[in-house]
Length: 127
Image 1 (cartoon, rainbow, N blue to C red):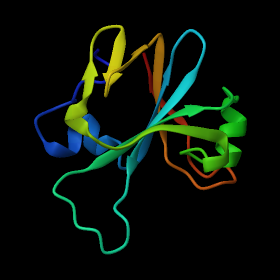
Image 2: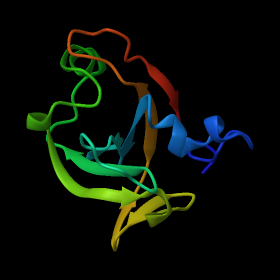
Image 3: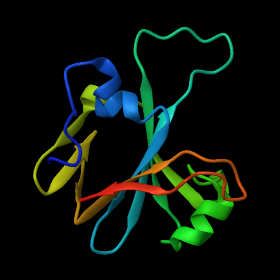
């Protein structure tokens, strides 16, 4: 829980704001999932930020992820949920739930968003 908890009272320290520049990878005992900020489409006005949860088709090594770019290209993930408001995610010590799906998380880490080719993208933190 401490890995996902907001880091302070300022909005820039909130996990939801952190996802504007980083992508969160959640791992169960069998799969890896990607949680990322979903930027508004051109000329779209929003009242709140939205996020996308996807299953990584393959749990790739860190070096390969850096080459492909973070978040992963669409061909590398299967979108499970899109247009998800932050308050739809329910976090507990060992799991994350969204829209009726529960994921038993054993590991999670943030990675800085990067373009293909390895610019940036190092692992930021783990839990």
